[in-house]
Image (cartoon, rainbow, N blue to C red; front, side):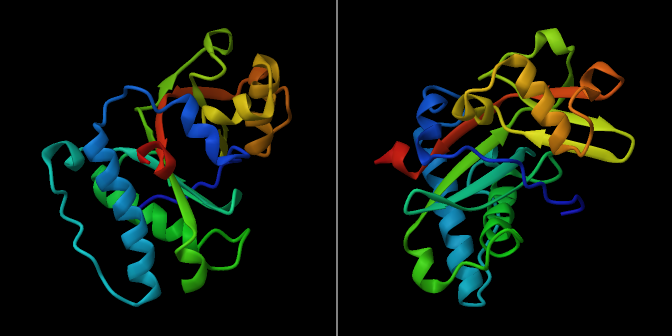
Length: 204
């Protein structure tokens, strides 16, 4: 992929997907395929194997931004994603799962023993669109704040899990970008997206 992986502040708990998993664009079968792919991508990397990345269905060929979040025993184990859609959602899930397991510098690389205990959550992003601060809805929108070369992203589930209000969400997104908390009032660009979020436990 041609873009730099993002590591947003993730939600605290793997129960996050319970808030967002009903309905959505992706069928239960498609969700199952993508979650299984994430696990297969990690296992393949551990054994120095390649896996085929040709999407098995036309819908999974569509380009999307994706974040893959890994948990182990209820604790965050990695989170990496791509904001902008540059390749199929199928390939993007495989690449972000591998990156979350082995390239998130906040953690040591996942071991073979740990891989069997991983729980995967996927956040599949809608296209970004400009948004005014007063239009941001906590629990519905994810945010990307940018100014100059700085940018920071928070997924829609983050303010819900941390109990943030509207203003705090705006401030924390700016802080994630390395900007002053009030940058959203002083010229920072805000772009919003929604995310279809689902995980392993949603299919049990």
